[in-house]
Length: 503
Image (cartoon, rainbow, N blue to C red; front, side, top):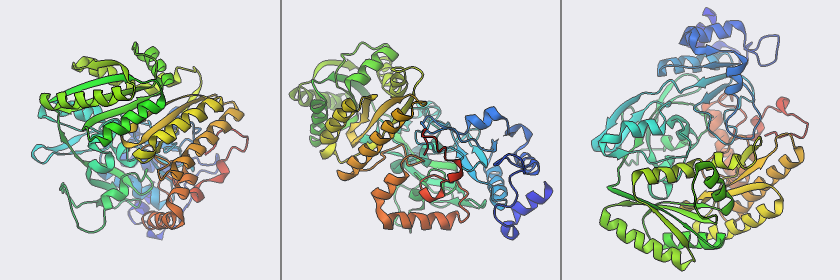
C-alpha cells in the first residue's frame, strides 16, 4: 500500500494499466489498491460491497448497470487530487458520480475502476451578493442552494427537474424550464476548480476570479461545462446568480392540437414577450400528470407558462400572451398567482418523468432530447407526434419549447428485445431529423453512451478529431470516464451480444 501511495506522488515511472485488477474476477480491484484508497479518505468512505457498486453503476437511463470496482466518497479537494493521482498512476479508470439522475448512462463504469462520489463535498463556500455570484462544492444541490439564498434576494434559476447536484449539472451542461429567460449551465458558470486526471489542480478562469466577461485567451471554463467527466473532476464551481423576481404568475392553457400549441409558442417568442418559462405537454403527458400529481387540468396539448417582473410589467405580459394564445385556439386558462399554487403546478411538471413511468408500471423510461431552431419546432413536433402514434410505442411528449428543446418519454419492457430495438430506432430517427433541421441531437441530457454516433454526425469529422485531440492531451491514458462521448473508447468485451439494450 505504501508503495502505491508513493507511486501516486511520482507516477512517471509506472507502466500504465499495471496490476490494478486482481487475478480473480475481471475488473476487481486488488486488495492493496483498495487499502491505498482507504489511506486517502478513511475506511468508512470506501466501499466494495455489491449493493454500493451496483447503485453507482447506473443512472435513470435505459443503459444496463456497469458497476465500478469500488466507490469512494472524498471530503475535500486535497483528497480528490490524491485519489486522481493514485488511480492514474496505476491505470485505474475514474468515474465521477453526483446524484445519479442523468439520462444517458454517463455514470456506467464501462471498464470498472473507481467511482468517485462527490456528494459529500456539499459546502456553499462563498456568496458574493454584490457581484451576483456564489462558489459551491460539487455536491451542493440546486434546491439546497436556493434555500440558502432565500433571504438574500438572489436565486439560481437553472432547474433540470431533478434535485441534481450542481457539479453534475455543470458536467452535463444541464438546462431546464427557466432556460428561455436565464440560459443554461453554459451561460451561468463563471469559473471552475477542476482536478485533472493526474491530480493537478486547475482554476479555469484563474484562482478566485468571478468576472462577468473576459477576452483573456481560450475559454477553459466552457471546455469543462458539458465534458461529462471525461476531462477532469469538478471540485468547485463559481456560478452566476440572478435577482429574485418581484412578482411571479404562472398559467396553463389547452389547445386543440399540437400544431396550435407550438405555433402559439413561436408567436409569443417572435412578439418578444419576456416569458420566463414556456413548457409544452401533449395530451398523453397531461393525462399522466393529472393522475400522478392530482391535477384536474383539461386533457389536451397544453402550455405551462410563467412570467417574472413587476406587477405592472406582468399585467402587460399576461395580456399579450393571452391574446396570442387565444388567437391560436387556446382555452381552459388556469392562472396560478399564489406561491403554493405555482409550486404545485411546477412540481407536477418537474415530476413528469415519474408520471410517465406510472403509465406502464414495471417498465423503464427512455427520454429523447433534441433541440432545433425555433422556426423549425412546429414541423418537427408535429411529425414526431405522428411518428409516435405510428410506432405502436407507449410514450408522450414534453418539452422546454421556449428554446426549441423537447423530449419523447418512451416506456419499454427491458426484457422485450424487439421493443427495445424499436425504441432505439425511434431515438436515432428523431435525432437525425433534428440534425437535418439544423438542430442538435441533445439539448441538455448530454452524449453519454447513447448518442455517440449522433455526435459524430452532428459535429463532423474535423469536429470529432479536435475533440479527440483535446481528450488525448488532458487524459492521455483514457482513464477519465472511459467509453463516453467517443465510440472507439467503448470496451467491446462488455457487449452483451444477446439483442438486449446495449450502448
